[in-house]
Amino acid sequence: MEIEFVAASAGVPQKTALARIVFEGEAFDGALAQAVAASRFTGGKGQTLDVLAPQGVQAARLVLVGAGKREAFDALGAEHAGASAYNAVKASGLETLCIETPDGDAGLAARAALGVRLACYRFDKYRTKEPAEKKPSIVRTQVACGDPEGALVAFPPLAALADAVSFTRDLVSEPANVLYPAEFARRVKELERLGLEVEILGEDAMKALGMGSLLGVGQGSVRESQLVVIRWNGADDPSAQPVAFVGKGVCFDTGGISIKPAEGMEDMKWDMGGAGAVAGLMYVLAARKAKVNAVGILGLVENMPDGNAQRPGDVVTSMSGQTIEVINTDAEGRLVLADALWYCQDRFKPKFMVDLATLTGAIIISLGNDYAGCFSNNDELAGNLLDAAGKEGEPLWRLPLPEAYNKQIDSQIADMKNTGGRPAGSITAALFLQKFVNGLPWAHLDIASTAWKKGSTVPTLPEGATGYGVRLLNRMVQEKYEG
Ligand code: BES
Ligand code: MN
Ligand code: ZN
Image 1 (cartoon, protein in one colour):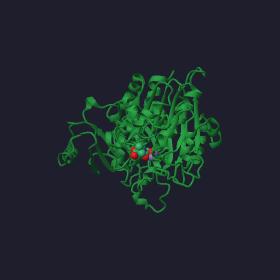
Image 2 (cartoon, rainbow, N blue to C red; image 1 turned 90 degrees about the vertical axis):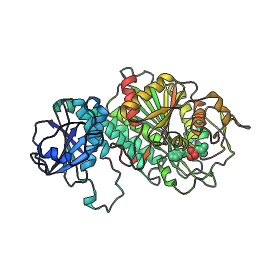
Image 3 (cartoon, rainbow, N blue to C red; image 1 turned 60 degrees about the vertical axis):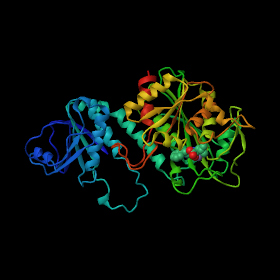
C-alpha cells in the first residue's frame, strides 16, 4: 500500500474513493443530508455510509466514516477510522482511497494511515486462482490533513510498526510444513539487514547447555529444535543493561503422545505466536532505531508423536537444574520457556523479562478472545504493560499468581510436574514459568486468546494472525525504557 499525505485543499484525483471522517451529531447539507437522513448513519464509531457519485463532490464515491464523539477522538479513534475507511471501499474496484481527516493534527493523520496499513494486510501467497475482481482494488491511500509535512514526519515509526506487525502476521500465518524451526530461524536471521544481531543455537549447543526441558519437546520431531537469540543495541551506553523478551515458538503442536483431537488441530500452526511477536518487536525496535538495548529469545520446536517422542511420566532436567515430571506432553510450551527463560537471565542479566506464549486453552475460557492474560511478580512492570496495552488497543488483563496454587504442580518424584489439573490452568502454567526466572522482574503474557482472530470485529485486525503483542511491547519500550 502506497501512503501519501496531502493538503486538505488538494483536489481529489479521478477514480478515487473519498472517505470523510465525521462525528456524532454532525450536520450535512444538500444531497448528503438527504442520503444521511435516508440511513441509520449517526456518525457512531465504526459506522460507515457509502454514497455513490455524490453531488458536489469530485470523487467516484464518498464514504462517511463515523468516529463517535468529537471530544473523545484520539489516536486509536483515528486509526480505527482509517481502517474502517479502507475496509468500506477495499473491494470497490477503485484504486485510490483519499481520507479526509477532521482537523490539523499531524499525529492523528499518521495514525489514520497506520490504520489503513494494518487493515490491508492479507496472507494470499498460496492463492493462485483468486479472480482479480475478488482481490482488494485499493493500492494507494492519500491522507488529507491540515499539516501534511508534519504527518510525513510522524509516520515513519508507525510505518516501521506496520511492517513489523506484518512480519509477525506472515510468520504466524505460514503453515507448519513451510515454517518449521530452522526456517523460522532463517527468516529472523535475515533481519540482520536492519542492524539486528542474530545467533542460532542448534540441538548440540542446547544439549551442551543442559536444556533437557526444551529438547524433550522437540525429541519426536524430524525438524531440529532451535534457540534464536536476537540483539538490538541501540542505547547510547552500549553496556546498558538490556530489556528482554522471550517467545514460545512451537511451530506445530500436535500435543505429542498426549495427542490432541483432530478437530481444530490445524490451529496449532499458530502455536508460535509468542515467538512471532518477539521477532516482530525486535524488527520494529531496529527499524525505528530505538534507543535501548534489547534481547529477544525464541524457543523454536515442533511437538510431534513419534517412536522417539517424550512420554507422559518422563522426567527431564532443565538448564536450571530443576527436574520436571512430564505428566502431559501437550503442556509443552512451559517446558520450552523454562529453558529459554533460564538461559535469558543467566546470560544477559536483563532489567526484566517478558515472555509471550500461546500457552493455555484455559485463558480463552477465562478471558474470551479479546483480552490476553498478564501474570507478573512485579507491579511496576505489570503496570507498564497494562498501560501500553490500553494505548495500543491490545487488551490485556492481569491475573494473580497465588503462592498456594503451587501445590497443584508438586510432583512425587521430581521438583515439579508440568500440569496442575483443570482448576486455574492458566495460573498454574504461569506459576510453573515463575520457577525459571530466578527472582528477576518478570511478566508472562498468555496470548492463546489473541494471537489469531476468527471473524474479527476490530477494523485493524483482518481475520487470521493478529500480530498481538508487537504494538504493546513497542509502546512500553518507547515510553518507559528508551533514552
Ligand atoms: N498450544 C496449546 C494452548 C492453546 C490452546 C493455544 C488453544 C491456542 C489455542 C498448549 O500447548 C496446550 O496444549 N495447553 C494445554 C495444557 C494442558 C495439557 C495442561 C491446554 O490448554 O489444554
Ligand atoms: Mn500443547
Ligand atoms: Zn502449545
